[in-house]
Amino acid sequence: MYIRVLFLFLLFILSQSVLSAQEVSNPLEDLRNKAIKVYIDCSICDLDYLRENIQFVNYVRLEQEADVYILVTSQQTASRGNEYSFFFIGQNRFIGQYDTLKMITNISETSDEKRIKSTQIIKVGLIKYAA
Image (cartoon, rainbow, N blue to C red; front, side, top):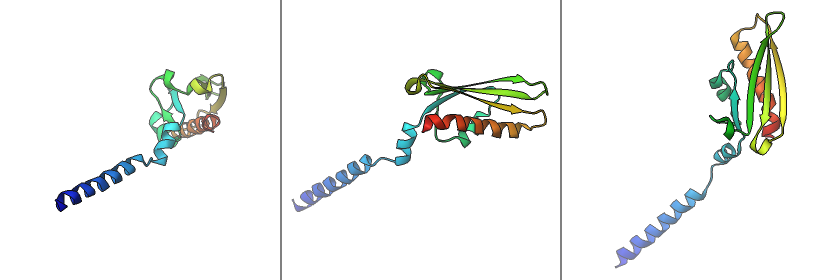
């Protein structure tokens, strides 16, 4: 009888510690769940590089799910460089908030330099929404 009571007591203590451990939330996971959702429509962007270097947002696959829809367009300049327009379109909780940032590249810039510049432009554009 004593062994049964001891066994039940230990089982009760262990179950309480497991339940309390499940209630503790991970602060990083909480931040990730509250982060803005972003959809990027960009033919020149390296999306893997963006995901590695802009980690304060959640990337979504459907534009309807996004809080911020980023559309990137380009046109050639007279000096054979390119002008890129980054349109930040607020959706869901940011509806009605729009921004446009521009980036000009010249013909001598490498693709890596363009990738770094475009990532910086996107970071700057997203700060307003993340704040």
